[in-house]
Amino acid sequence: MMSVKMERVLDNLSSNYMPFTLLSKERLSEVVNIVRFVELREGEILQIRGGQANDYLYVVEGSLEVIQCGSVRSFTGPEDTRSKPFVLPSAPATATIIARADSIICHADREMLDNLIAWDEVVHLSEESDAELHERLELVRNSLVFRRLPLEVIETAFKRMEIVEVKAGENIITMGEEGDAYYIISKGTAETYQMGLYDDKPTKVADLGEGDAFGCEALISGNRRSETVVATSDCTLLALNHEAFDDMIRNPLIKTVHPNVAKTMAETGYKLIDVRYAEEFDDHHIPGAILIPLYELRNRMDELDPDERYIVYCHAGGRSAVATLILAQNQFDVVSLEGGIRDWPFETVATEDEVAEPAARVASA
Image (cartoon, rainbow, N blue to C red; front, side, top):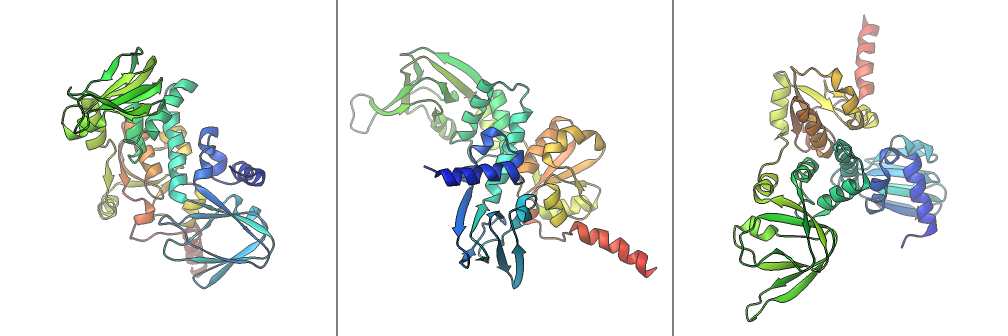
C-alpha cells in the first residue's frame, strides 16, 4: 500500500510534469507501475541506471547534480524537469546523482510510459465513449494473448469481437469440440473442467471471473478443445472467432520497416513524421522529419498530402504504430519505423543545431 506522502508525490507528478499531465485518469491509475521514487538526504550519492530505452529522471523535490559521461548537470529545483525530463543513459551505462538538498527523484520507465500514451490514443479512436465500452476495451488489452501485441492489433481485435450472452449452467466450450473462438469474460463467473491422465471424469481446475480469458489453446494448436468451461452465473462474453484470431496473431495490421530500409525509402521520396513531443524532437530527431505529436495528429492531418508516402517514427515504436493506424484508416500510404529513433543507427540532429547552422552561414557571408 502506498504511503500518504508517496500519494502526494504521485499526484504532483501527474499534475505538473510532462507527459504525465496529458494522460487520462484511467492511465494515471497505472502510473504507479512505471515509476519509482527515491528519497535522498542532502549529501547522499546514488548511482542509477536506465533501461534500454533511455529512461526519464524527474526532480520532484529538492536540488541535485547528475554526473554522466564526465559531464555535470545541475538541477536547482523541480521546475527544471517539469517540461523536459533528464534522459538517463541506456543500460549498462550509469549516472551518478548527488543530492545538494533533501530531495525526491522519480525514475520513469520510458517504454512503458510510451505505451500508456499510445493506449490513450487507441481508446480515443473508438467512436463511442461510454464507460462500459472502455471497460471492455481494457479487458481485451489486459488479456494474456494480447498483452504483448502491438496496440493497433488490440484495437482492431476489439472491433471484430462479438458480445455473447450465456445463461448460468450452460457450457461455453466443451471438451472434444473444435476450437471456434477465443473468449474473455466481461461479466459473470465460470468454472473450467479438464480430464487428468488417470481421471475417469472431468475435474474442476479453475474458477473464472471478469477479465479471465480462455479458448486460445485449441486455436493456436489446431487441436480439439481440451477443457470444458461452464457458466456458474449469467455471463457476458467477448468472443473473437477463429478466423479473426488468426488474423490478429499472424498478420499484424501495421506495416513496419527496418531502419536500413527506411533510410533508403526516405532518400527516394518518403516523408518522415516524428510523433513524439516537441521536447523530444528538439533534443534529437532524424534530419528532414516534420513534428506532429501523436495527440495532435487527428487535428493536423490536413497538413499532410494524401499523394505523398510517409514513414512515421517515435521513440521505440509504440506511438508510431498508433499514428500509422490513424493515417492508414484515413487512406494515407504510411509505414512505421521499426524500433523508432531508439534503434536508428544513422545521423540525428538537434533543433538548436539546425538553427545555428543557417545563422553561421549568414555570418560568414
